[in-house]
Every structure is written in C-alpha cells, then in structure tokens.
Image 1 (cartoon, rainbow, N blue to C red):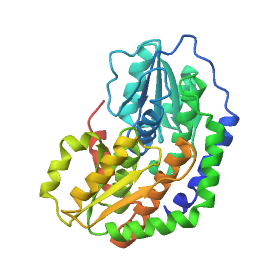
Image 2 (spheres, rainbow, N blue to C red; image 1 turned 180 degrees about the horizontal axis):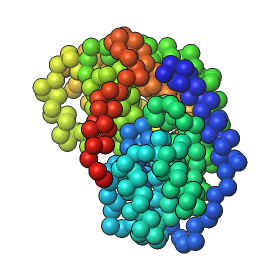
Image 3 (cartoon, one colour; image 1 turned 45 degrees about the vertical axis):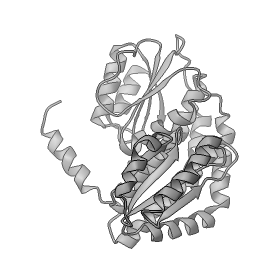
Image 4 (cartoon, rainbow, N blue to C red; image 1 turned 60 degrees about the horizontal axis):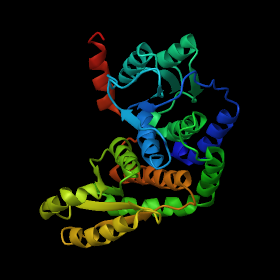
Length: 329
C-alpha cells in the first residue's frame, strides 16, 4: 500500500493522459439531473465531487450507495456508475435499473460485469488499471468524475489544468505532506478521531474516516459544520481524552464557518487536549481536495504502522461478500 500511496500524484497524471485519449459520445437529450452510484473506495469520489461542484453545477447531483435508484431517474438523467472491480452488486443493480429507465449511463471501472455491460450497450466508459485495492485508485475515479461532469456541460472546472496543477502540487509538497502526516498520526494513535469539515467538504472527511477504518483498523466518524453545531457539539459534554478532534480547513471556507470553528475548538478543548487543524494547499478546488485527501492517506499509513496492523487486510469485508454470495440475487 505504501508504494500505491506514493504513486498518488502519478495516478493523477495517468488519469489525465487517459482522459485526453478518450472518445465520449454526446448524449441525445439534455441532462436535467445526475445520479452517481458507487460504494466504498469506488464511491467516495462521487461523494466528494458532488459537493465540490454544487456551487457551479446547473443541475442537482445525487449520490446513492445502495441498490435502488430514485424515482426521478429518466431519459434526461446522467447516471455515472463507478465500481473498481466492476462486480459491486449494488452498483450493478442500480445500473441495470437506470438502463431500464432509459437514462444516459456512463461507467468507470477496471473490468468485471460492469465493463461487459458497458461494452455490450455501447456506453461511455473510462477504464482504470486493475488488481489493486479500490481505495488506492481514488485519484483515477475522482479525476474521471470531474471530467465526466465537465464533458456533459455540468461543471465548468477547467479539469485538465486543475489535474496538472494537482499533480505538480503533490510532487512539490511530498516531504511536507509526509512529515505533517506522521506528526498527525502520532497524535491520533490510541484515540478515536472525530473529523470535521465545513459543508461542501464533508466528503473529504469521509475519505479520511474510510482510510482510517480500512488501513489503520480504527473507528472514527465525521460531521459537518455548521450542522454539528446544532447537535453533536452538545455531545462533547460527554467527551474525554480518548477522542481527538480534527478540523479539515481551507482558507476559502465561508467566513461565518471560519468563526464557528474558532469557537468550537475552545469548547472541545475543555474535554480533550487533542484538537488538530489541517489546512489545504493549492489555488483551486481540485488541488486543495487532492492535497487533503493525499495527506489523509499518509496519516492512515503511518497509523497502520503505529498500530502494527496489516494495512491490506479487509477480511471482514471479504467474509461479508462470501456470505452474501450464498444468497441468490
């Protein structure tokens, strides 16, 4: 896993190269809404990109992590199905439902039944290299999702430039990122991390939590500012030093939320002395997101070392899939 984390910036460049050689077909009908289907390491990119573009997309974007699609899906819906293996049963089920509703379907995968379905139906499709843990291929899926939304005219981001800037930023900041991640990991060892981000950035906090879950074998949770001000903040009355609050921040976050964070930190510090702030770097939304995500990946790696666990092992998930395979779909 360490080598795959080290290749994160290269994955962005490889994804860009794949995009520049892709040949997508324009949809026959206008797109009125978007549905992104994906779970786990395959799905988190959809969660993040849907939040990041909500200020520029002219249509609503919904993310599902289940079998069944919403009733609004029709011939004017763009459905993006993302499954690294191509065999995620929830995503396959949702994709078939979307096709039965005559939606415009686009697929992101490395193979499996999803690739077979996309090929047989002549769907727009982007491929990833196979054979790795899905969570390690995040850069491909995230880059592809941003490109797809731009291709369909749903988010004018200047994706190619932002991807180049992201790769350069990570290359330039490699040692800084690793050093900061190691320091954060040392402070989080033996604690339950509580990850906070402002509205529109919570998906990045979710990625941190997922990486801590899978790589470091740690429980954690995430919450959104300002929503957590209206409930979870009171929950800190039962807080203690076993918890660690981690604020993922951007200089571009809304001014009122910046002020909220300063107040929240002081409240939480009455219950735990582990209150951390992690600031993004970069001049645009994709580089800033990639920076925080890559930093979180390294934090999870260093914690896996400190916790002395097998970073690759996902036996619990494998057991679940084995048991489910015994039940016919």
